[in-house]
Length: 102
Image (cartoon, rainbow, N blue to C red; front, side, top):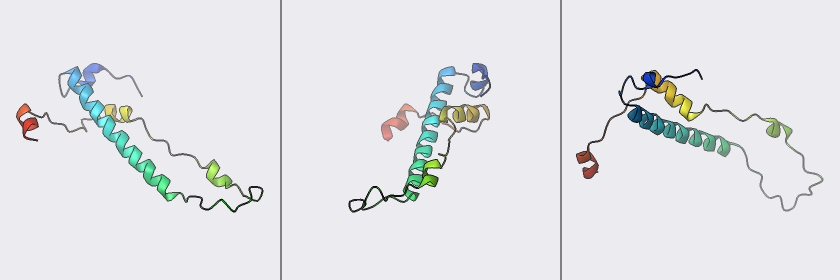
């Protein structure tokens, strides 16, 4: 990732702290989405059942499964920064009256 200026990140909010909070919350959302995706991929992989009766000398190792590369996901913070720079993050501020009603 290239060097990012704080001024670039605060163009939309005019406040460094607001920008950081917005990017932090977006990075958490991205992280949660990635966790769900990983869990879905793990469910697809067939499990090994009933190994009690097997002789371990006769067990074949599934080398393809061992060599399978894990999908690499981008870092959530980097994605959030890029979205902030590209004005792709939508946010709103919650008033104190809205918080009380919820």
